[in-house]
Image (tube, rainbow, N blue to C red):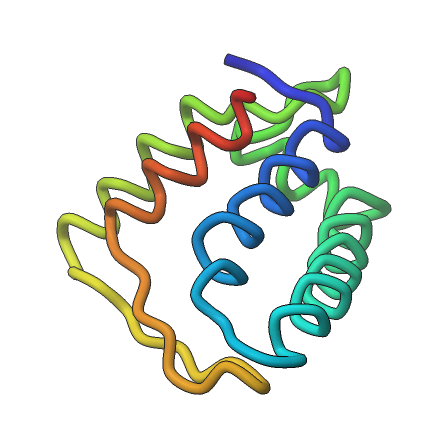
Length: 113
C-alpha cells in the first residue's frame, strides 16, 4: 500500500493519541500530543525535502510521485525488530518508552486508516 505524506503524518498522530497519550495523566495528556505531533511533522517534512528525499527515494520507501510505500517500510522495520528485539528510548516528558514489533504493526494499521 502506498500513502501520501499527509496520510502518513495522520497515521502517526492517531498512533500517538491511541497508544501513548491514552496512558498519560495530568497536563502531559494535553501537552504531549501538541508537542510530539508538531516535532514529528517537522522531522517528516525535513526528510521529505531536498537531498533527503532523493536518498529516501533511492531506498525505495518513497516513489517518484512522493507516495510512501508502507508495505516495504513495514516489512523492513519488522525484520529489524525481529533481529534486534525491542528498543527503549528516553523521550522528553515521558521518560523511558519501549517500542516493539507490535508497535510497528499498530502504526501500520493507523497509517492505513
